[in-house]
Amino acid sequence: MSWCHYLPEKKKKKKKKKKKKKKKKRKKKRKKKRSKKKRKKKKKKRKKKRSKKKRKKKRSKKKRKKKKKKRKKKRSKKKRKKKKKRKKKRKKKRKKKRSKKKRKKKKKRKKKRKKKRSKKKRKKKSKKKRKKKKKRKKRKKKKKRKKRKKKKKRKKKRKKKKKRSEKKRKKRKRKKKKNRNMENRKKKNSKKKKKRKKRRKKKKRKRKKKRKKKRRSKKRKRKKKRSKKKRKKKRKRKKRKNKIRKRKNRKKKKKKKKKKKKKKKKKKKKKKKKKKKRKNKKLEEDLEQRIIFKSSKLFTILYTTMTR
Image (cartoon, rainbow, N blue to C red; front, side):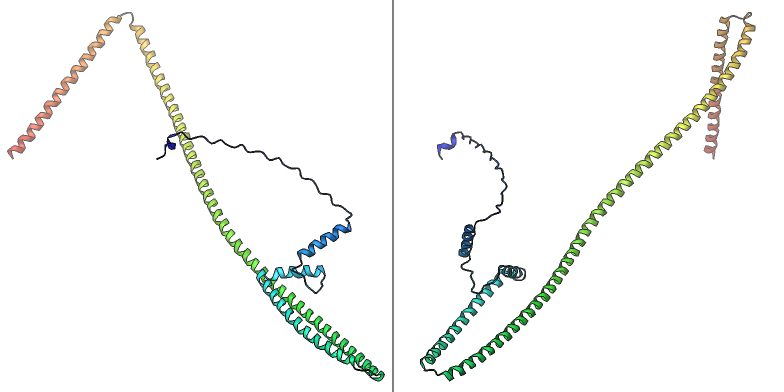
């Protein structure tokens, strides 16, 4: 073990980030007049870059661009590479064949020139040459026509293929769209169902709450009505009782007024006490008699049962 781990760890200092200044974008002004020298320089640069991809046959730029676009749409990069290789091979073969033929023709011409030529022969030869030229021209025209026809046919075929491919592509697109739409609809429907369920549940709860409230309110109203009725009844009873009591009191007062002269207040109190005592005595006697009666009855029942 090293002694370093006993030492306290040093805190690392945080580096401050520098804020980048935003550069103001300047609008580029296009020059109307361009110099010819600059154009030539640019052309030379392009030629250097495209030196590998040069072809002997000269074509217009527009045609090249159109063909390139078509190839991009139709074929992949691999196919294009393969085709280029094939074309190069064919060209080499053709060149070789042509070179051989040219050599042979040159040799023949040299031999003919060495021989002496007469005027008649020259005339005949000139006629023959003219005829040959005419024939060649005719052949060339025929060939050109054939080539044109072939080109037209190819164009038609390409157009047809294009149309078919476009139709197929459109069909695929539609199918994909339909499938997507179906999936999206399913998802939407599932979401809608969930939402509906939630809404229904909410509505149910609200209804329940409303019903409960209504019931409570009805109950309260009933209670209130009942309580009101009860109060009314109570009041009526009280009124009646009060009326009766008042009548009695009036009668009593009248009696009292008559008897006030004869009797005193003290004697009245004594009489009331006596009445209470008498009542209590009577109750006690009645109870004793009832107990005795019940005991005698029980005795008789027991006796009869025993004797039997």
